[in-house]
Image (cartoon, one colour):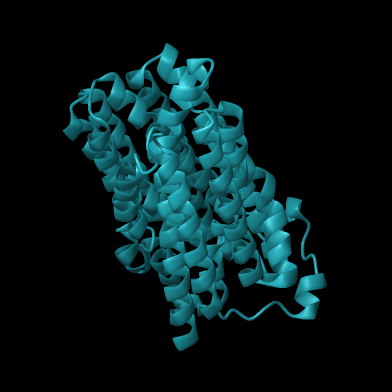
Length: 394
């Protein structure tokens, strides 16, 4: 247990550094994209390319970690972060929209690798500590909630005459800190049989209710969150709120995403996975209601904060649920497919967000989230019913 807690601490630090990276990009990417894009409907394309890079590398990272171990994969991800950050800084300095998109694409590999921090925590944790380990690692993201937006504000004009070059340069330092922290990670690799084994066919695994609902809720949680979060800086700028207010809203959104993780694992133990995930769905719907009720800073703040808490309950629950659906030999393909589905959803939501905001507006974007949230809620209720009425064994 002591080793498990030590690994959780190291992974929580890495999660915090990853989220600094993410919140800096969230805060500046859409604004920089809007300034450099030859067509303003492409303003969120840099955000999209971040997730394209993640989608392209998440399955390779999963199988690499199966063969070489978690730490090797995480360090390689941090190397991609350094390269991508430098490319983005050069792109903004030279006012090149397409080079910026390429740099963010490279940065996406870091996000793909970092998504496995939560699974790595579960690898070395006893079963009764697994959901708590996952939630505590995600809790490290609260560091990003405070440090990321402040870093964006402090480094915005670091390079005279070239706004927003500084935030990308700052990400290099955070990636180096991640590499240093990973030296203390100690997770036993798979056995030779587990590395070579393939387990059940993916089609058999995918027919399990636990797998289906875990993937559904993870993709809905991330898709809705990303659709609204990505557009928030643009929406606030359209309503003439200053950049500092947008950074404040994103800061508290990230706090909402990760601060609940200190108690999410305990809530899952007391209430059960399904109830916590249903509460997450309800909080997301409440977020939409508040966003539709007004466009003052406090409306954006409360809506985005609830969006973060709702995401946390749904995503932690979905991650814990997914670990019930596979064996160690199967985890590379199951976790890889799950995260690939998440990143494909992120690509679609971020790619469409700019056009939806431009042609449909903030209110319509929020209203579109309601049907998919209801679908996730229905999936959770179906899982509850299936567990109470299991199918007869073949």
